[in-house]
Length: 223
Image (cartoon, rainbow, N blue to C red; front, side, top):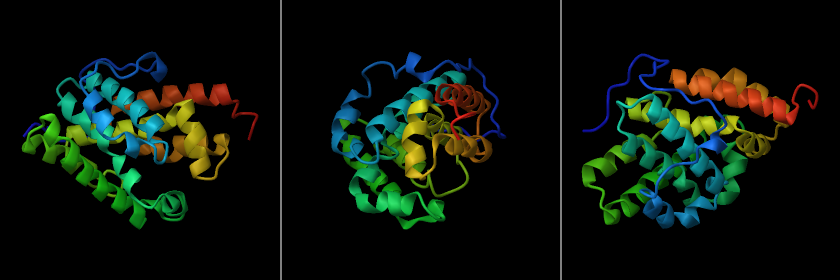
């Protein structure tokens, strides 16, 4: 097993925290390009073609802050975690997945299940062994619908999944999904999502990104 036990939260970093704009450090290297190429159709659903690359960039910053973590596991899991949105009824994504008690919406469980199946489909032909694939699946399964993380790697992927929302690109997309104006959505991020973050690095990145987004979007006035 390559996962590490979950430390007390918020998890203290052992490496350097980078809070600069995420656009300054896109995901590095070409190691994961074969995975990206295998899920292009799935990236076209629910703006995954923006969400997933930005989340990967945040994941790489988080593993830099936690060099003890299995970086490959975190990076592969974040690339694939929402691919399942591409195999569910797209008309239900916004109507069910972003309204009411959305964390318990059936469509969210469905996209997790589909994401697990996609991981099992695409990773073995690319040379990833069964144990690694099942560790990826264990992180994808429940990433939206269970409250707790099961390992350090799980926690890092969860924080990366949330951090993209704090960048202005994430605000622009997700505010519309929740039928909120940007100012209201930014307030929701500050009050409801920052408390969900599991790492000190994630909290600092989120606060810095949110401050920049609010200043850029002039949410103090346009509200």
